[in-house]
Image (cartoon, rainbow over all chains, first blue to last red):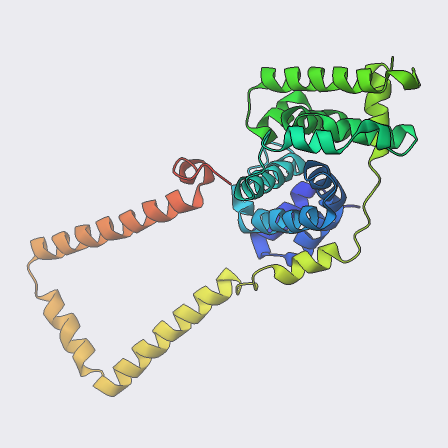
Length: 178
Length: 114
């Protein structure tokens, strides 16, 4: 029988079991790295560095995980905080170079294919809408869970998801319903 | 125009699974070294305390301990009561501090961040 995340966390807490923590990393590395890759706009090396930092921070502070939310939600929050701190350090936080980045990435130059168009359209969204859409639509978090991850009001998450979705749909209108 | 459900499906499918490729191993390699189990640390401390006591008893010839107990027994009863009460207060204070440190709900009141 496969152990749940809660079982593995309990083992880490009880015996400082690094194998159990390794299993948690294996289970969640793809989603955490995927989230960070999109937040960092496909800067793979930076995203992986931040993901490592997030997992190390999770290990160090695992006693503060009280099991009220899913382990993945708690992990996303740490990963998002790592990203924000790094962005602040690099002075590239929300909106600072957003316009410049959009100007440099003309939608006409995107590779063909819905996937590419979709990912490109997603990367063009402002950070707060992009993050909300990624968490709720891509990673399957509820609005409430996303609000916890982003530490913003529930209503703001709903608005950001709604606006992000509408922008994506407008950008991808040419593809029609699938 | 694409509907919400189709958009969400496309978004989910657009993100491929990222192969581990040594990522987990790199994280594990950077974890701080494991500390000894608590019971082992407790046993070491207890063992050293017993050993120290034994050595002190042997070196002192035993008569110091006997003389101490006799002298202690000759103290007035009120002084013994005060001493016992003081010991109780100290042990109780340590127990409360230990309980607070072990209770996440109380501990997190002063440390809310991750």
